[in-house]
Structure formats: C-alpha cells, structure tokens
Image (cartoon, rainbow, N blue to C red; front, side):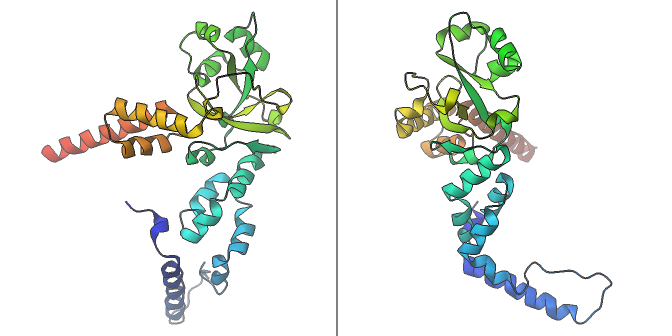
Length: 265
C-alpha cells in the first residue's frame, strides 16, 4: 500500500480547489438553514507555503503533527523537520532540550510520560524494592521498564532505568535519547545534573548507532524467519523495542492465519 504522501502535491491542491468550486456552484441552487464553511476556501493556497506551514505546525502536538505529515509531500517535509519534532516532543513537559538521534523514526510518535526515565547508577546495597520506595514508583514498573524477570537481575547491571511518576521532574531538564542494551528500548533519559555518565557501557548507541541497528535487525530476521526488509519494517514500527516488534509480527501472522482459514471454509 502506497503512502498518502506519494500523490503529487499539485494534483491534491487542484482536486481540492476544484471540489470547492463545484460545491460552491451547487450551493447556489438551494438554500439551507445551516451554513457549511468549506475548508477549501479562498485562502487554501496559503497552505502550500512552507513559511505558513511552519508557523502552523509549530503549535501542533505530536499526534496532530503525525497526521499532518500524511497529507502530502510538502506537509511531510515540514512536519518531519528535526526542529519541529523536537519542539512538539518537549513542549508538554516544558523540557529544556532533547539530545541525541533515535535509531527509529517512530520514536517521535509518542511523547507520553512512559517515554522518559531516570538513570540510576547502582551502588552497594541497592535493591529494586528500595529504589521503588526512593523514587515513589512500583516495583513491577521498574522491572518491566528494565526487562527484568527477577529482582536478582539488578546485580548484573551498572544502572537501572527508573520510571517517572511526577512530570514536574522534567521541567527545564535535558534528556538524552538512548537505546539501553538491557531494557532493549529507546528512552529519553534524565541524568543527575543533566550530565550523562560516560563511564558506563549500557548505552549501545554511543558506540555505533548503525551497527547496533543492523545487529537488532539481523536478530529479528533470524528469529522471525523473514527477509531483511520485513525485519527492518517491524523494527521501524516497534519504537526501538524488539519485544514490540515480535508482538506486531505475531499479530499480523495470526491475522493471516485467520484469513486463510476463513477462505478455506
């Protein structure tokens, strides 16, 4: 299925304007009690101006920005600008800035509180329970975020990612986009004093983003028994989470099986 942005922008504008003219002529034949204002009014040509689109899009939240990027190539090029994405990503939480480039473009589609985490460097005596009390979060939330099965997993790690329970923590802070090798997901990480710990080895994209991305795709390809393009697709829609990629793949596979069974009977 082709992307909606594949259609020529000029064709879209001409169709919309023509439909406006046809609707205007037909409206003169009958008079109704309710006045309908067509979105394709005399100012529609302004929406093909990059400068005007920049002014409009900079006020859109993440979901609306994603929708705007699907209208046409011009809108997509404006809505996909890094500065535009960053502004929409940080605005709800009043962040100072976000540093780093995500491996997956879908990272920007979600800026919920679950996208952020605090980096806690593990010290002697730390337990999952004690950290849950310290940061006022649930033990299960810590384990789920860090891809931990048991509490003993803490002893093989240098740090834990702590879910954020109070959004006020994000105000005027700097986040770092990282792919945590243990959590196996991309998160916007907060560090003490907004300074990342360079001594650690749990952030794979500090070594090589492309190399890390290739390794994950190869792993998905072998595990799913699919070609490279298919593995790349499920990785791109998983928001940096291999488990989400597998879940999406399984859901699609189940749908195909149900459809085939339906066709057979």
